[in-house]
Length: 290
Image 1 (cartoon, one colour):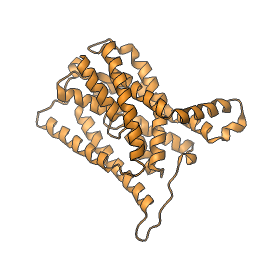
Image 2 (tube, helix red, strand yellow):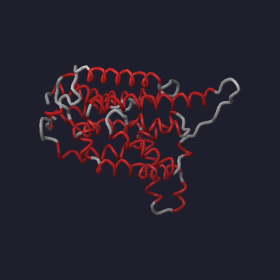
Image 3 (cartoon, rainbow, N blue to C red):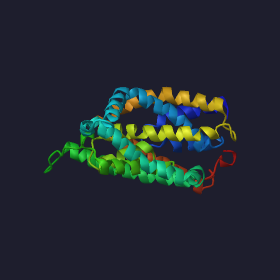
Image 4 (tube, rainbow, N blue to C red):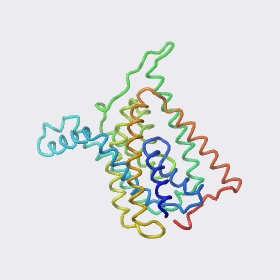
């Protein structure tokens, strides 16, 4: 992998990680369209550490408060009723599904799941799911004729059941094209949470999974065409760009709909399917070198 490739892929990672359009799919597609080797699951997981570092800094006050309450709840039973301590426990509970499935499906994640036909299909299907969830949220928030405004849930309403559902939604993102934020935000909206609450918990829930996945994949750097230097460079680029994107996205969702992302996902999926079906693009483009 050249330094230019690592810069572009780091830029793509930073731009797409927090948006509900799937960063892993875009890394795969960028390489395929550019005629580069597939960067692979290891590069994707490690570059995500960069964007996750942006989450740690952006939500640093929330994270510090949650960690403090969680650690105190280990010895102080009274603290277990504290909301922040409960969120800490629920992040752990919600991380179980992706941890178990990530290890179980490792071979599929690095192989069959990277087929461009599957990626295109998940882009379209999850785009439709996000669109439905967004419309339901908008209907509750705006009310309308013969309908009153319905109050949506916040993180204070989060319990074990919802935490596990969030976790299973996140695990769906093991398939490129699903999108970690897209799946968890859709799940949150369908469970009745506000856009802001769904996105905030989505980002907090991703921290253990992304950091653990990145650490696990460190052993594979240097194998094949991906070396340490470009990987670290891409991770730093992803961090810088990701911080700007997450700040913008958290402001965007407070007043805007997810529909632009829905339309983008569906159109991109259709374009990929057309290109593959006409032979203009191989469903396994770049895989031989990855």
